[in-house]
Length: 136
Picture 1: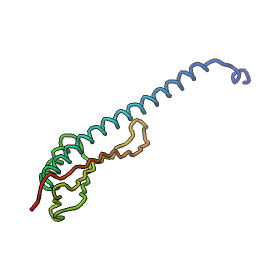
Picture 2: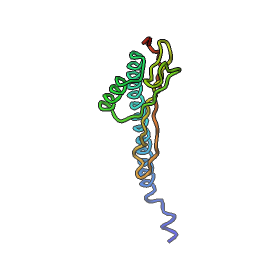
Picture 3: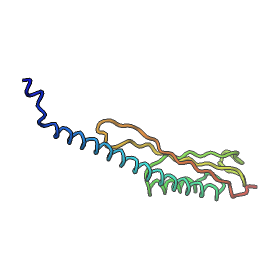
Picture 4: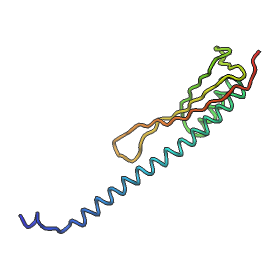
């Protein structure tokens, strides 16, 4: 029995298996980082288009909601939060010319490749702009 435990045979195989497992773990992390970077770029594009629509119209109205739905159909489901420095008319969410408007777009995803473990990650993009419409 002592000879079996002192024997060095098969040690190279174990080193190769551990090396392959470590390489796969690094590969999974690299792919997840790349996926999160591309997701962030897409969210930046979406938030940019939404703030452009909102500032042009001077409000968060049906045209803004329609553009958000169009982008959801084009890309993926995401959450949109809107805010303004000061509302000219709060019932219509109108913002006076020159006031600050903000759009935050976020999506919750998971780190993939870990088997049964699900680690939630929230990727967020925030854009702001100035209202371009004068309300009488």
